[in-house]
Amino acid sequence: MKMNGLIFVLGFLLAFGAGYLLLGNSGGEETQDAPAPQATENSSPEASDSEATDDSNSNADQEEADTSTEADVTLDADTEALSRNNCLSCHAVEAAGLDGGTTGPDLSNAYEEVEGKHGKPIDEFLQEPTSAVMSTVIEDNPLDDAEREKIVELLKEVSELND
Image (cartoon, rainbow, N blue to C red; front, side, top):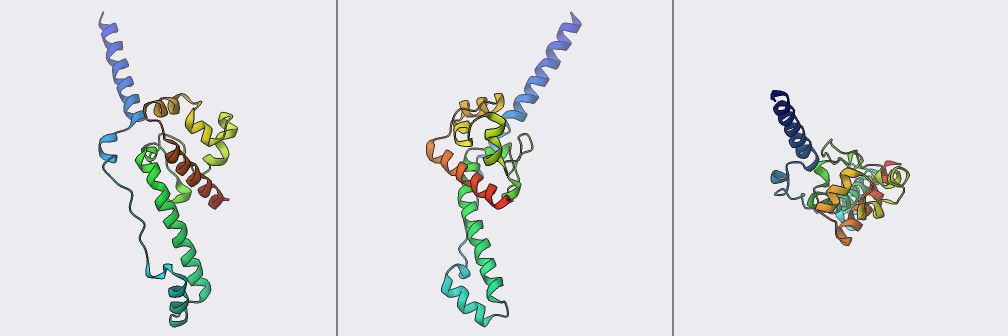
């Protein structure tokens, strides 16, 4: 009789812990908004040209800074979809500089790798996942078409940057 009680308690603790890890602590992360993209004085082509001649920086350095700013703004705007849908509670996207959870795999190469692992492109996978964990997550919180498209586009951009 004592053994059955012990098994029950251990089973409960394991199930509770697994549920916490899989579903995460959604209380704290839902209130955090992704940072809004910041416009800089150097974002217009005219500003970057005039500042490049006034500054000791070369045009090549200025163009490189403008390009990285534009890429960061695009990624910042698109990462909101990952934040709103709690993707980052389990997954990181290291190639985009997004720290996230460690429960799920890093999504830096997901755009290219999901089809090989799950037999369908990432867009279809996010509609009907073939993994048990993601099936449960998506079933409990399905992505609408616009959010899914933003996530797929972000993962495509990250994949291209990662090459």
